Every structure is written in C-alpha cells, then in structure tokens.
Image (tube, rainbow, N blue to C red):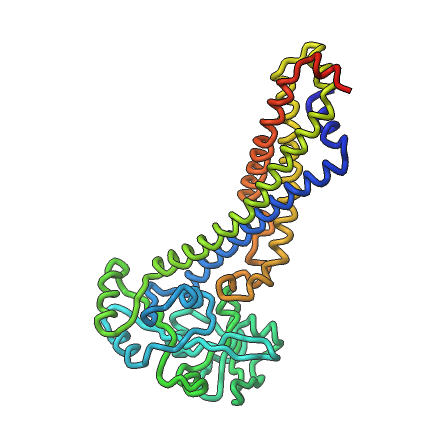
Amino acid sequence: MNHFKLTWKNIVRRKSRFFFTLSAIAVGIASLVTLLSLGTGLETEIRKQADVLGANLVVTPRGWCAYEQISVLTGETLPEAIPNEDVEKIAALEGLTAFPYLTQRTALRNQPVPLLGILPAEMKQFKGWQVGQGRYLLDDANVVIGSGIARQFELKSGDQLTVRGQEFSISGVLQEVGNSDDLAIYMELATVQQLYAVGDKVSFIAVKVDDITRIDQYILDIQEVANVAVSSDKQLLKSVLAIVGSVGSALQLIAAVAILTAFFGIVNTMMTAIYERRREIGILQAIGSKKRTIFSLFLYESAFYGLLGGIVGVVVGFVFSYFAAPYIGQNEFTAFLGSEQSVQLFSAGITLKALTFSILVSALAGVYPARQACKLSPVEAISYE
C-alpha cells in the first residue's frame, strides 16, 4: 500500500473526528479567502473609480476625514462647503479646468439614488458622455440619467420623476459606460443648490491640469486663492487604499484566530491517533521501518488534512464572498462591492495562497505528534493493548 492510500485510510478511520477536524480547517480558510476576495475586489474597484473620476487634482474643504475621501470616489452624499466664489477663483487659474460637484441623494420608488449637480456642457465634454436615448438637456425642468438607473427603474426619455416635491422631465439617458456614472441622476448645479437649499456651495471640485509635470505648482496656486485642501489623484487613491488596507489587516487577524484554533485541533487529533495506533507503530518498527518513515507518515496525514480543508475552505470562501458582497456594500466604505460583479468568483492567486497556507499550518501542527510517534520504542508500542 502506497503512502497516499495509507494516509487516506488512517485519517478516515474515525469518520466523526475526521469531519470535525476538517471542518475547523475549512472554516478558518473560508474566512481568510472571503476577506481576501472582498479585499481584492474592493481595491480593484477603488482603482477603477479613481480612473473614472478623471481628475488630476481633487479640491475638498479643509479637515475632511477618511469618510469623505472615500465618498468622493463612491459618489455618496457629501457636505457642501466650498462656495461658488472659490470655484470661480480656481477656474480662473491658468493651466487648469475646474469641474464642481454637488452630491446629494433622492429616492426613486423608495430606493436611494445618487443625484449630482454639475455644469452640463463642461461635464459632458470632460467625461466624454454620449446620449443613448433622447437629448442632453439639463435645466430647471429637465434632468439626464445614467443607463443603470434607467434599466433598474424602467425609465426612459420623456418620463417624469419627482425630486423634493418638484417634477422633472427626463430629457435623455446616457449611453452605458460601465462604471458609477451609469448609476446617478444628473441635474444642473444651480438647480440642485436651490432645490436642496445649500446656497451657492458645492461638495468638491475635480481639476484637470494642462501640464502634469507642474502638479505641485498647481496645488500651491489653488491654495493661495482659496482656503481649501488639495490632493492629487494619486494621493487620494493612496489614502483610501491605506484605510481599506488597515481595515482588511484587522479582519484578517480575526480569520487567523480561527486558523490557529484549527491548528490546535489538528495537534489534538494527531496525538489521539498516535495513542490509538501505538501497536501499529510498534509493528512498523519491528519490521524495519525507520523513524524517518514513521515521522513522514504522520506528517503526511496532518498535511493531508490541510489540503482537503483548504480546498473546501477555498470553495466556501469564494461562494460566500459572492453572495455577501451586495450586503457588505451597503455603506460608503464598501460601496464598491454593491454587486457580485465586483468580487472575483475565482482567483488563482488567492487560491494558491490559501492552499499553501492551509497545508503549511497543518503540516506544522503535525510535527510535534509525529516526533512523539518516533520516540516510541518497539517493545513499548507492541505491548500496548
């Protein structure tokens, strides 16, 4: 009988013990895979949304925290704090173009929907939007919607919608672009300011520069004319990724606790197996098996637990992350994961890491029991009843 068959026969000898030990490993690995999968999907979407913003600089009020920085990328509601006067001063600077945003929320059929106040002509050119249906008209009576909103709520050009008690006509539906631009209602900036009674203020300003090599100088110029904070697109992305990374690391430590529990479970299982098989170990020694052979047999068994538990954990982890993403994406910090498309259903990199980790931890757990098995003398082992 080869090592594989012997290992399999030994670990399934006690089926209930095999099941519970395997389950402990699988739960730990599934937790790790879920967090890695969601984290990878979140990071990918953050980078994607940073590209969608299309700005070299982002102008925000001073003192904004991480919550607002993430909301710039997600399109969530933000406090209005930059007056039009500052927008005009920044727009007047040579070598850059300013695109103010006022982010609010409305509701369609009792579901929250992002509403963005923009400068119509400038934003259309900046984003390169194309109209898929109707025409591009934004004024005090007309709005434009993204293709995702149109599809979700079965809306079309010419339909009516109500925002804060005022009726608006949908003049057009934008062509699908495959990002968060598809999931918003767009309204003329002045109309949103009046409708939401925010005065002449905007939430933040996206800035496109003519010369990327002078980015530091542009930041200084903006701060000289307005009392605002300015971040480059790279700085904003780095800041958001650092926040997400810190949260992810904390969650992975929690998953590590589950794996550590599985580690001690394997140690206990292998020690019990050695106690039950002392006579078998003695017979192997009596027929000439070396200590190295006995050591390897038990090490194979513990590693095999890791392989099987890792496979089960990987499958469960990816499946769980797929179904959990829409629920986890209900807040601004994880809003990128609002759909299963943002989560990798399978990742070769995560799978390899998880399986390798599972096998190594399980094999390490088997070292001490295997050493104890080698220390048994043939006479002591064979005489065991």
